[in-house]
Image (cartoon, rainbow, N blue to C red; front, side, top):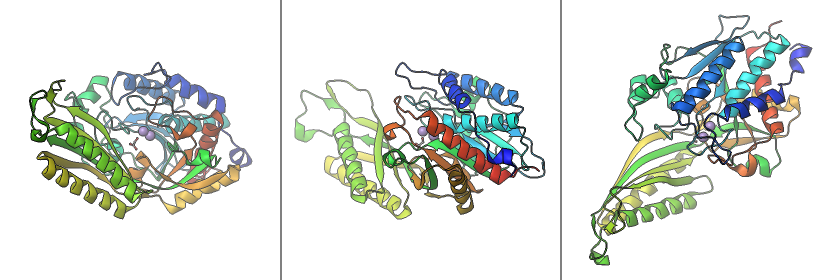
Length: 416
Ligand code: GLV
Ligand code: MN
Ligand code: MN
């Protein structure tokens, strides 16, 4: 690599400014971001991103699930590009960094290479994947999963949000149902920078997490059906209270995950009482479950434990407990050569580091099933994420973006 390329650093102030500029799209009063996938704020940030990509000389195209690709030519256009990026959608009460850092750092890498006049051998392609978060449409990371062939495009287009709006309708509403068939844009490999979203790096004062694995995920839609009846007149032993049964399911989830710990987590994050009324015993409750582990055997045990708990609660309380497994994502083991590339870039830049497992799901986990993929983590304050308080320092974000750039340069090669 030339002297210029090996000493290259991204523009920290410019990266920081773009993170804060895009945080205006869906800004919440508490300093977070609410930018649900394919909603009006997502359109705003997508329009901003498209313009910024074009201004940086990238050729932008959008696939039929709305994922955005910005291609920077390389010397050898017979090679597929090295991919880098993440997502710009957020949780309903999300932060400024989850997904945003990886996408805008990818843009910053391009801007830095442009400023330095560096041409890579293979092209590079920056990506904003549609619906990583999964809070409006399930499952999470649906566009990269379709890209990897885990779902068909038509299946994903037909998924509906809580209001009955389909992905296809939502894409049309904001004008982002692109022309490029999903999977057309090929990659040599893919690298994603992200905040850790957990407490490990901060606790150990490490700047970079070299991600070697990721947790598998089980998502269920659940429904408990009991019997609605009068809150004043129905004696306690005669009730079939769906909400009381759900309370037991919540505690069962907690205890199953704790028993299988520390490598297991389980959460009931949504619950909706049908026809709620203060003086009616709840007769029907819908809920969701998210449980995860990086160990396939523990995932199996989580599933078994949940099903046993559901059967036991159902029989004892005389309610029906339905658990529908809507998504099973196996644990991820990132590509060893790419992990080494991230580690080498980190060491050559002199940043403290450790190997780490991702607790969260990421588009790179899906992509890793069909191409070499890797991830770079930087610390976030108090390990907090999926929360408006989510925070990270400019220095750590800069370090992560530098590692991203040097990993990509090593993978794409610098034209001589
Ligand atoms: C994605 O944000 C996840 O739920 O891990
Ligand atoms: Mn994310
Ligand atoms: Mn997230």
